[in-house]
Image 1 (cartoon, one colour):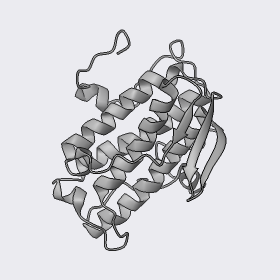
Image 2 (cartoon, rainbow, N blue to C red):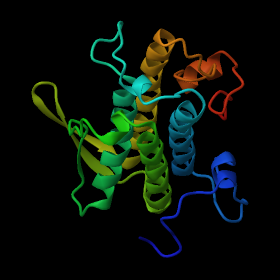
Image 3 (tube, rainbow, N blue to C red):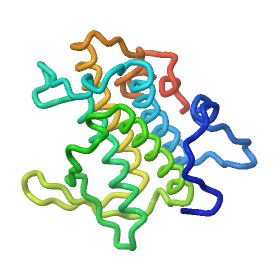
Length: 210
């Protein structure tokens, strides 16, 4: 663990003041810090889901009638996996080879809301540890089973962008399952930033910053 970091649980003030604010002298805004903000924001939406809307573990494991095989817990786990796989890749020695086809199924966060909350917070901490010291242009090789094995040239910045957008995509499916359970979510939950911007929505990812 890098110096200055502890494994203690964040205080309520730290969690509520998300994203953590810094003076411009401390943090220079770059495309990578912007991507970090987006990643933290969408993961924080998952934590807010667990805090404000999921009241029992059973709600994480209810199978959707409209999305066969889908549960809220599975979508939370799968969305987190992409961030963790990317971070594991960039922390490993080069050459950097990334595959999102690795699956860590049946983990505790799929069935336990406290485990899910802790896992999402852990990923936010991992992002905050790794991303500020990374280079968005670092080349990666992405491997994918399509079902043919394909390889693509990509970069760390592009994949961090993709992980955030992929997360929003799965939040939209969680929104469907939540509707089946009569759970009403925030108006911006599961909507892509481009949609929110187009609609002029007031949301953390809904204001154009172009």
